[in-house]
Length: 151
Image (cartoon, rainbow, N blue to C red; front, side):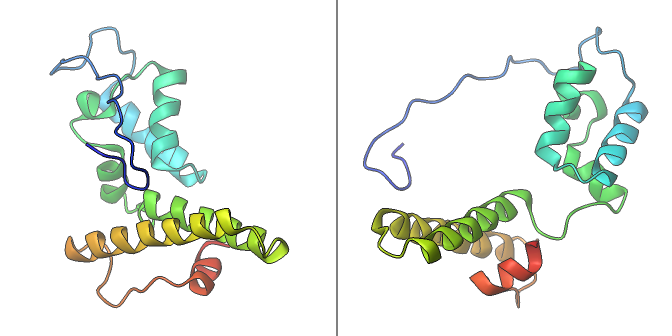
């Protein structure tokens, strides 16, 4: 499959092992993992970082195998789910930082194109999340509103 913003084709990354149950060597129970997820979320950690912290520091290779739910599902159950999806938020932060760079360097045409590509990704994600009911239909992306939402 071709990449989104280049003409090159890419090689797939490594795959997870095909296991269907939680390994026996995992030291934490499902309730302990859910409590840690809630604690980390209250500390302001993103769902992806929560998964990495559980993997690296607590020896939980896969939260879904251990609990039967993903990190975002656990956060939704505990009413800690963020207002915007994590990937959309990360792209909006990148667009804000790139816009600040372009204000200082107005002749940087390569990064101007990069900003256009990032905003195109944001609009595609916006359309996807509106279609799946994750974002309200009235939600609209603009750079000025993104700065207000995220800062």
